Length: 227
Image 1 (tube, helix red, strand yellow):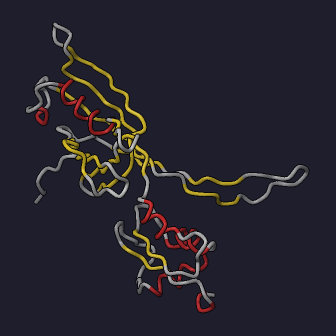
Image 2 (cartoon, rainbow, N blue to C red; image 1 turned 120 degrees about the vertical axis):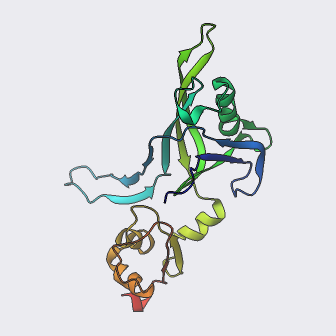
Image 3 (cartoon, one colour; image 1 turned 90 degrees about the vertical axis):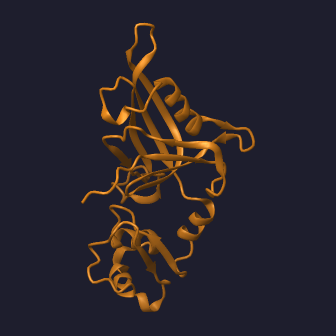
């Protein structure tokens, strides 16, 4: 039996810790996106001394995660999901208010929490392009497409606690994301992927290849017992 229909929701916050919701800062899509795309990028250092052969690439950092998807606005009645949408412009203005409004106190747009099904993303809007497609005889739009891009980040306190990039001798806890592997995370934390079997053993993992998104993994301190 399928669950009840969920709508993609964007909630705006005034602080990067996501504690203070913005008044009237919530948008729910009447028509859910057909797809959404995550983009990941690892930045490498490619410096090479003159007259030398190609050097091994060195890890620099992981760029912020990016999320892209499109909103469809339709008041023609042709789409069943859009039956309650009376005005395309009003709905687009609400989306812009939640995602684009400039906060005079923080001097920046809102921090956004995007959720839908298994999707949970925290970040800020970086790009929005709106195309109006159908119009009434008086020129009022009745269908539009908004292409949006968001850049993710982790709250400062959580980021510091998670990274500890200079402290491999401390215990680290990671929440698994789609596509994460133990060798890769071991490389990020310890600087060497060879410790992944020790991490699997410490977490009593029967199959380290089948990590689940949302699962928490403990990475023990790097000491002689890990070598």
